[in-house]
Length: 481
Ligand code: ZN
Ligand code: CU
Image (cartoon, rainbow, N blue to C red; front, side, top):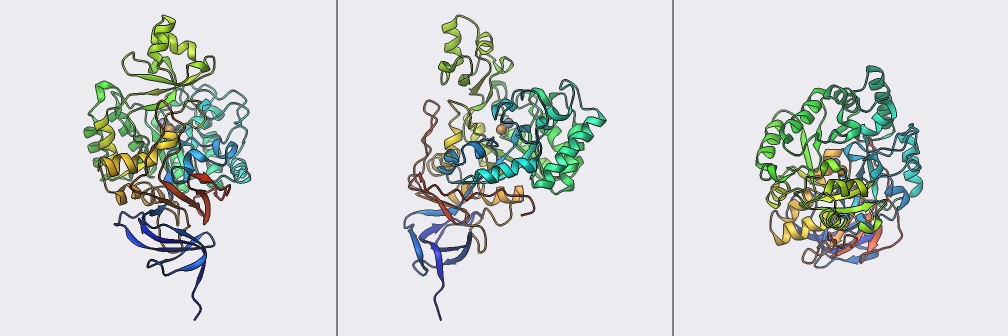
């Protein structure tokens, strides 16, 4: 009998399979993009052997909350994600997607976070997917279609709810995207282009997503004082449309609401008795989005992540800029506009409470086009594994990995991903559990994590010792695939 031969072997690793089960030691054999064998240590033979003694092999991480729509095309090496062990990104969150785009205007904020008019150039989701495939990104890409993007295309006046004709037009655009393979609908009712929409508008669209087995992700209307009502609104829409909802970057923002995640998590738990409710979070007490004077309260710390008229102010605190200019913070924000900012709007106990919920998936919410980005862009996943799991012992390593892999794959309908199992795709990360840590900080945000040895995407080694191999083997993950 001939011993089987594998193209790639991971030898003597501690296998954390993504299900939450404890690690076990063994070898993995990889052939043709897939995990072909899981066997006892030192039992497999092959052409290329990665010695993983003392290291963990886990399913590649799935970043369920990204704004990488343009990044996967313009910068397909995808180093901010690959260096964290991320092998799949879900784009199109918070109501913002690059496609479809038929409008002739400049994309308004926050659509501007991911591109200008020249970047919004895909009339259909099919055309966008073709562009992603042509760019050959290093990571897999699953996409959502943004409600705000649909509105800019179809609604004549963004200050009011959509008319029945406009809803029909949005439904047609959304249906094309779902047909092309999008995973679902996202919304950001907090933001100006979507604020005027009521839940009937969302439900009309979510029903289209439901009809093709998609999901609904929601950056809720209010993460501050009105957080409970806003959570209810998102859950109500999903219930009416009969599809699963994911509550994006769950938080209680603003000092008046610190500590309230006890209430919100209890509320979400109660809703889960009657419908499918998921949530994601990033492991930091600061959020980041466009800089808007309306979000400036004069209380919390705000740091500038980019400013078109004042690029020299990136990385500096709004309060210091205001003092220097001898104006109040709202006025300073106006002068910096168009700009982005990091808002220190959460409290540590809330972040830890949300991260500790067994239903919380990890999503970076990184903003790849900011010149001084929030460190979550480069650090979210290693920070959960190193800081929160290993150092603070908030949860076990196996549980941390589960919330980055199988939970996420199941939630977004990604088949044969998110687990180390026979015939699953060989999306894998090999890291040192003792040293893995985020290096990106608020002061120096563009730093690759340490402790990541290899990252494998669809059976190809994309990252070795923290350095890109140049292999770009990501795929667009369509709902049916
Ligand atoms: Zn958001
Ligand atoms: Cu987001």
